[in-house]
Structure formats: structure tokens, C-alpha cells
Length: 487
Image (cartoon, rainbow, N blue to C red):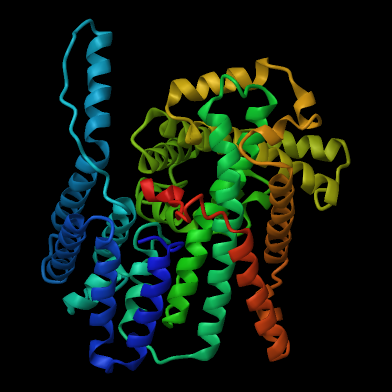
């Protein structure tokens, strides 16, 4: 079930309404049943995988509190969970890679190809469940004794299939106390959901038409077509993924639950390292807490620090998809940061010699633009259908010189007309303004709720009407999938 579907618009009010009228003892059981139904709307059989992960990590938590030798328990929990993830997500990729390795050695080896459908959200709920095992192992939380409450933590429907990847210290503790209806939280949650729907339906899905047209026939749409499409893809994936996260946060808030912030104006970052502190925060912090720091972090010298960082980003790329292009994408983002750290003394010296003012608007803008260009270049490997295609796109992007297409109306032939392209530009300006307000700690929601009731509800009605009118619904009102559902 998609957030941007008629089914969800029927499902969610029913879930909320019954949650607040049911007795306290059964509220979480109702949410658990609703969460499993929500997931089973995609493929009912794969709910068994969530249940398996839930049982394994639940039992591991109980055992960890009773035994002295804890590491074997943690290892077994990780092996069982990651084995399931590996089979469904990486089996064919691993067999294909092995076949290529043997081919390089002159050995023709035929590997089987399994017809495997990737379960929606498996990477997200697997990592969330594993974080619970690690938190109990570290003594940061007590093992949850109530199985149904823990099962709800793993399967809580707003963030089940695309995050944020919640920590047990945050979500599990909140679920321990069923909530009473709070009008202010419900109102704030509704505003969040409206913003998320705007990002997804009005902006991301409209941009997707242009990007899919160009990347789908990149030999025809070479040069500046690809440059424009790549810049727009950076906006598309941001709005698509943040749109899901914001809708999830809003839906949870209506239920009285606070989910962690997953994005913090990442494209206004002044370095790639800062970008990754602001982009997909729940995953970045997961890798930091459960992989980077255990590997030694920055405590064992610079060389080891750089190796650890590359390991994290290569695995982060692999987490996103079973393809060498994703690995290159992750490696590039890691390499950017390592090179940035190595040359930081030289940059600091140049700034001093040239008497540049780091806090000036011009200096900050240059840093933001350079950071965006580096991140956006890496997105090519993320968007392309494989490593070879990504390299071909890069060659066509920089060898074909056709800057006139920016001015002669040729861009209007890429799936969208001039009015829709203008609407995209206007919506991007709204996005930049919202992110600028976030950087300046100006909370637009708080400003709205401080106004008179007629103004507040006027804003809500206006926003909903705008989404209904300008939303990209497809020729038969089909809802578009979220990009991160494939991970």
C-alpha cells in the first residue's frame, strides 16, 4: 500500500479512529495488525520474513540478558538476518560477479539465475531489528519482554518500508505507552503529511517524467539534456525520499509517536561530509554507530580512519542495491570526503593567503555549489541502469556540445511542456526557501499554527487543493512508486 494511493487515504483514517477509541490494552495490538495488513498489501507471503526477523531478534534480546558469552548470540542474530537479506537481495548479483571472476581466469562457469522478487523494505526493517540486538548487547536498553510490542517496533507501518530506520531507544520506548489523542500533535502531523505529499506528488513525480525520458534514451538526449536531467534527478530523489520520510513522520505524529528527522536541508551543505550528516540521517548514523565506530572509527590513525570510512561507504552503496554502479556511487562519496580531509590544510592555507572570509555569502555559495556538483555527479551511478550505462552517460554528457537546447525550447520535448517545466522551477524555489528556513531554525509549521484559526485552515485547504490540482496522478490516476522501495 502506497502513501499516495486511495487505499491509504481510506486505511489511515480508519486506523487512527479505531486506535483512539479502543481500550488502552489493545491499542498496540490494533497497530500491529494494521501494520502487517499494510505490508501484506504488497505481498502477503513476505510478511513471514518480517516475522522471522522479529522472532530472531526478540529471542536474541532475551538470551543476551541471561548469558555471559554475548558475542555468539549477536553473531547468530546477524548471520540469520543478513542471510535472508543476502538471498533475496544479493544472491543473483554475487553469482554473476563470481561468474565474471572465473571468466577473467579463463574458466567458463554457468551460474544459476534465481527468479527472486525483492521484498519491499527488507533492508530497512532488517537494519532496524539488528540495531535492537546491538543496543541490548551494549546495555543501552533492556530486552523487551512483550513480544507483540516488540513486533510493532519492527513493523510500525508509517516507517516500515522506507524508514526512517528507528532506534529502539526512541521508538520502542514510545510504543510502551499507548497515546491519547492530542489535537496539536494531530494538526502538526497533518501539516507534515501535506508537505510530504507536495514533495512527492507535485514535484518528484513531475520531475521523474523528464528524467526518465532523457535517461531512457540517453544516446538521443546527449550533452546538456543529460546535464539538466542529472541536476533534476538530484531534486527528484531528494523530494521522493524526503517526501516519504515526512509523510511517515506526520502519520506517526498523528498517532502520538515522534520519529527521527531523516533529512536536514542536505543540498545546502558546504562539504560532502556535511551532506552525509544531513542526508538519510537514520542510515548514516546507523552505519556510524554499528559499523564505523566498532571498526575503530578515527581512533587508530588517519590511514585506518580512511579505510574505515571507505568500508562504510562501499557497504552503504551495496546496501542501496545489488549492482557495481551502487558500489561506485558509495565509493565516490567516501573518496570525496577522504580527499577533502587530506587537502584541508592546503585549502586553509589558500584561504589565509588570499584573505578570504569563510563566513561571507559568496564563499558559502561557492562551497554549496561545489558540494552539489560533486554529489550530483555521483548520482549518475545511482540513477543509471548499471555501471556501463553510467560511464556511457558521462562520456555523452561531456563530449556532446549543445548548450543552445537550454534556450530554443528543446527541453519541452522531454516529456513535459513549458508550463510544467515552469511549475517545476517554482516548486524548486519553494523547496529551497523551506530548506533555508530549516537552516535558519525557522519552523514554518510553528508560524502557521500561531495564526488565527481561519488562516491556519485556509492554508491547509489551499495546500490540499494545490496538491489535488497540480499533483501528477498519471493518465489513469495511478500512484507512482517511491524510489527507495526498491532498497
